[in-house]
Image: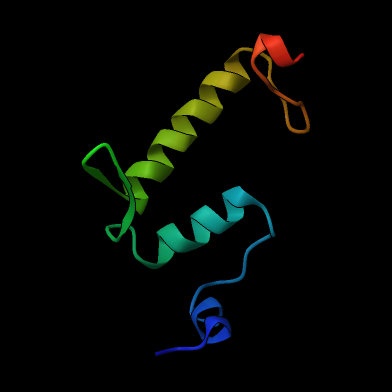
Length: 75
């Protein structure tokens, strides 16, 4: 079994953000299973594409980097 740091070193460095982490892992093996949800397996590529679409939709609505988002009950 590989040590955790050896696993981390097997991927390209990223900027420390969740987006950077996802991009790094997607670039390494886009068809690898990333998520199992309600019986569906999402690959890194599929999940990254969905995240990109959501980010674009939020940007179209005026959400910018650094903005905080929450359901209305929490604002």
